[in-house]
Amino acid sequence: MTASPRASAADQHPSRRSIGSAISPAEFRSLFRGHPSGVAVITASGPGGPVALTASSVSSVSADPPLLVFSVSAISSATPTILAADSVVVHLLDADDIDLARLGATSGVDRFADAQSWAPLPTGEPVFRGVRAWVRGAVVSRMDAGGSTIIAAHAVQAHIARDADSRAGGDALVFHNRTWHRLGEHSRVGEASAHRPHAAASTVRSERP
Image (cartoon, rainbow, N blue to C red; front, side, top):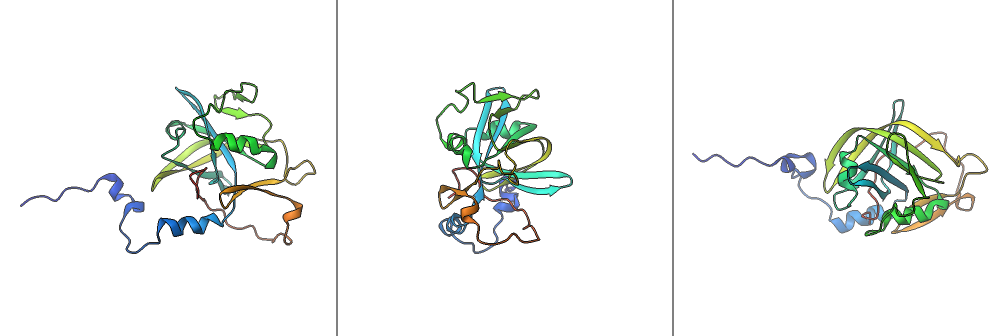
């Protein structure tokens, strides 16, 4: 009797299981093309030096303990360094940080060429100067999901330069329908609800539709 070949680890992963009918990639992209998300730049450092990428997948998960998640695509050159890192820095951007958002989303450039625009923390992670806010997180979990990896990090250090609740707070930066948008008082459509929506992860950087 011939033994049947064992499925690979990738085939056994829940995201690879056959679950019957599914919507097409084009339809899935269309769904999220109309779903705006915040913009962040993820940085890490490794033996090859610092790396950065722009992400639209950052989401808070829990305030106690302080946990956040984001995803990185396998096709990004920064991904191997981020996956190997024990800690990362997540820069949470507003509209004043649009140049940094574009830098992190542009392929084939040295994102750290301007030595005056960033500095390493004592723990080694690179931080870009002047951003609205940043948080350093210790990586606590990684999960493969299709062609991406979802990373969960425990916030251990943070800095806020422009608080969204203060007069100094800039307009929010969001990614919607393949481009950047500014949110501010002009885009308000109603009073905030007393209940905050549940946090959930979306899709990553310029690989997002």
